[in-house]
Amino acid sequence: MQALLASLLVVAAGGGLLWQATDGGQALTAESARRLAVQRAPQPVSPFALETMSGASATIPDAHGKVALVEFIYTTCPTLCQSAGADMFRLGSRVREAGLADRVTLMSVSFDPEFDTVERMQSYGERHDADGALWTIARPRPDVLPQILSDFGVIAIPDRMGGYTHNVAVHVVAADGRLAAIHDTGDFEGIIAAARKALR
Amino acid sequence: MKRRLRTGLAAIIMFACILGNRALEADPVLHVLVQLPMLGLCGALLAPRREWRWAQGGFAPLLAALFGIAFWMLPRSIDGAVSFPLMTLAKFLSVPLIGALLVIGWRQAHALLRSFLKAQAISMAGFMAFLLTHSPVRLCNNYLIDDQWRLGFGFLFLAIGLAMAWTIPLLSNARPRAWHRS
Image (cartoon, rainbow over all chains, first blue to last red; front, side, top):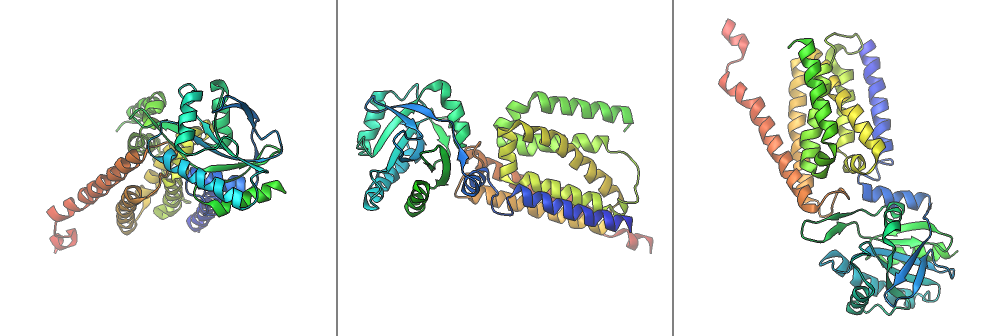
């Protein structure tokens, strides 16, 4: 009897633990967990300044009330960032089509700011047809980078070939500094819907 | 083994796991297939040798251990142990407890239950091997896809190893004991 009771208790507690640990069976990986967390409750990110590929300064969140669509890259990335770059270009076209070009800004932020100089950002921007207006490439100061990555939940690890492997996504940041949504770079509908929602 | 010897061994293993945590966590194969089992062994060595009424048949402690193992099988938990100090602490506390519960439960478990759990362990290791080698995405933000793949093969070898370790003795002793007696 005692053993049965103990077993039932264990099953209840264990089930509860796993339910908690997976957000009700919805998030088995840290990546899906971070997306689900901001979807449920937008999280504030600390504001930070950036130097863009044209040498101008910018901020996230945007100082002019625009919604910022932010991805993290490094300019010498051979694989993922290149396809993410192509996705950002297409996202730009979709933003224009949706009539949001004056209320949304696209930002590719380097997480390797010491290496990614203005010149390197420029050449990355040229390769991907970033116009510098709707979409620009930018880098933060190296000393604030750890805070930014932790706020956004981005993890970049050396790939043993001189580059990095990192989680790739578009982060929707409302003008008030809320990180409102995280989507795959190719999920244009999702990103634009989230941007519209963040504008409200 | 003498109690003092077991305690000393557990202390050494725990010390090594804590000191080497950074290095062990850097590689998922070492993290999941070396450090976690070592921490479990720590608890197993320290498990009190007594039988409780609540643990009769081994069901309650084994179930608790299984839930614990299920928790640490989630990629999210492993990622968390690398990213968040609180989860690292949880790892060092909970995995030895899982090891202790396994031993406590195993001692009181019926042979049928033990066999069931062995089969379950082999199939779970096989499942992890398949998942980790076939997932199109990285399951842990802290690990490279190549490392995930290596861990998958680690689980494959583990499944094969366990299957061999548990079946070969059966083959050499092909006749069940009951037959010997008659």
